[in-house]
Image 1 (cartoon, rainbow, N blue to C red):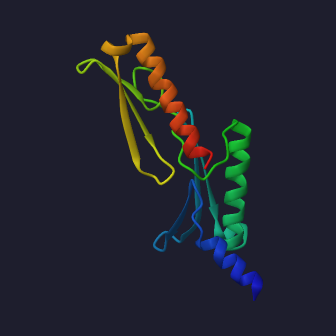
Image 2 (image 1 turned 30 degrees about the vertical axis):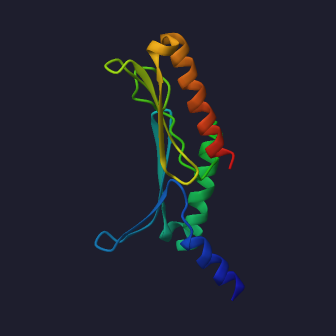
Image 3 (image 1 turned 30 degrees about the horizontal axis):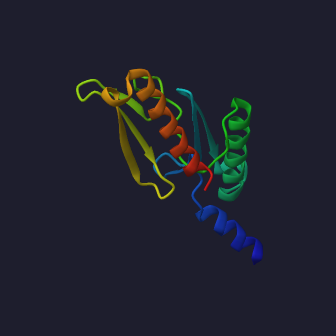
Length: 147
């Protein structure tokens, strides 16, 4: 009885980067793992049939995800971490707004809420404003991950 409760609890938990797939029409049942790291995606499907059931396939999926992240050097966390940036500054969460003459900094706090601020280029100079914006971003990211 205790074993069944433990299995049920694990099955109901959310597992980062792991999604349940149940397609009755295609007779496909299992867990799909997708690990993204520096713009590359590594994925694998764990079938209930091949792994010995829903619980066993989930355990295999979690083990593969953890092993893949370790091999890649990705830090294991259940928190959302952005590793790719579309910004021209090359720093995640820091973008240059030439029109308004500032660097804009954005982050997500530990409660999952968006935070924003900006650093004036006119007030600090372009190089110092960029450095200050990067420091703010780094500080906010550290606060979120260390809580």
